[in-house]
Image (cartoon, rainbow, N blue to C red; front, side, top):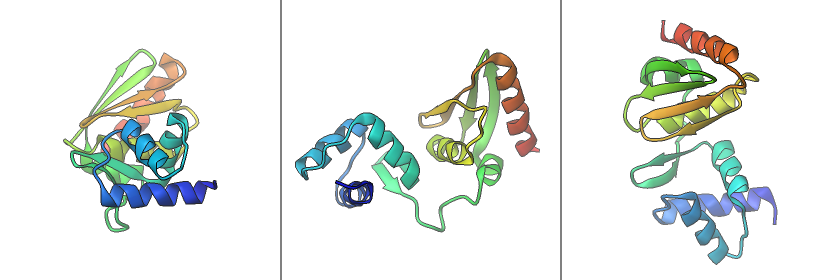
Length: 143
């Protein structure tokens, strides 16, 4: 089972059914004979640029994809707050996942990881000093 095959199956599934959670996705893939761990699915979702909407996961069209983190931040980022080694980003409703994917894709070495909800992204940094530097970088994007 290759990665491209698995990702192709994921696209078929999200286009034909409402897949709202990674557990739903894992179960649907299993029904197709594809075994995948949660870690693998998370990586696939990130690499494929899938976003979680109220109707489940979906792939962004080329027109919907942001050019970069700066353009997304400028459009959707509403607030940036720091909490020790973590940064809480508030976005317009429904856009946290897109911002998190863009930040993950930007591959900033000082960002350990992100976790997105509907309008909130948790950005985890290795320590408070790095978090402050990341916050400043994000604030620069807001102008």
